Image (tube, rainbow, N blue to C red; front, side, top):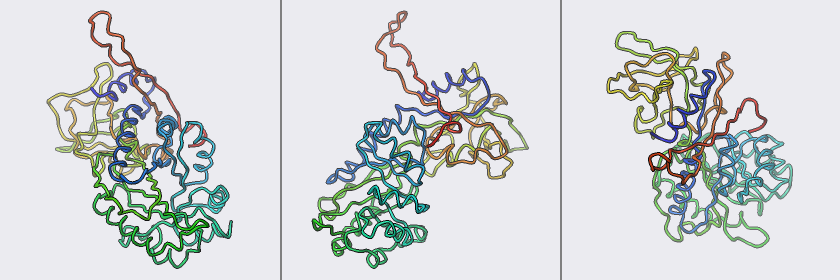
Length: 408
């Protein structure tokens, strides 16, 4: 049984009510942090790329503390997130920096970014002009590059637009956002090489008092919450780039999270079976099954109080719905469920660490609000006194109620 399933059993037995809850496996989070750092070193061997956690992905403080403790920086998208980051980034011994991205920057946030010289990834000419209104010569600006595809017409500016609008010495670098879970090793490498060639012919707009010594390049690579492999960039292919910052969100936290809700009903209507749970889209701002999930059955388990994991051979296929009065509140389709599943059992969805409660609509029709629990295995070297075998893992738990706590 997985650590998360064991922790679920312990946590569920301590529940005094039927509220749904999230579980965050901090040991798994640390594993994925190491995996992403190795991924970056393999992909960008010539650059000491720094990693920035996208705070909006999951602002749970136990998750953020673990990530910042690994030396990552923060990518923020609002004034509230920026203020929180300024207050807290140094509390966790992080050597990382703060960057600001997103397409909804207020004038106050832009002003704070310029006055604090925080890297500001610009999404429009309007944002650019707002930064110039704060300072005639801001030096923290990084325009977002708009790729020439329909997907990116909402985001950023073309290279021609950047060239025509830029003034000498105000650009720190460029920002490339690849799109949610759209990472493609060959295509993103091709785009980076093209950007490098463009910078080589437009160095003048990046020159500062000391001349041109390379640009900063911020990349939102669109890594999914599952394992993918990079293609290493060859020596000299990013010769115009001084430093690289990667914005990482779901790739860091998706797999550390699980979400559990109690089953309210199992409805059988002819050949169709529907399972209704005490939860749903009001707690999950991102689909349970992404395009990178192997199958619907790889992300779901069923448990029964005082029994444990339900894993019988006798199974049937069902759709799992939330408890909202909405037709699209479908959490998982064509899921294999035990034929004796019933009201009072629990469903446990894996890979739900990203864009959960804080990206959802928790107040719609006043349903139960979930708790959030993080856990890690306590280190132990003491064998069992009776059998001589290693003792079963013990867990340390921390609980956080996002809807009662201030700030991200």
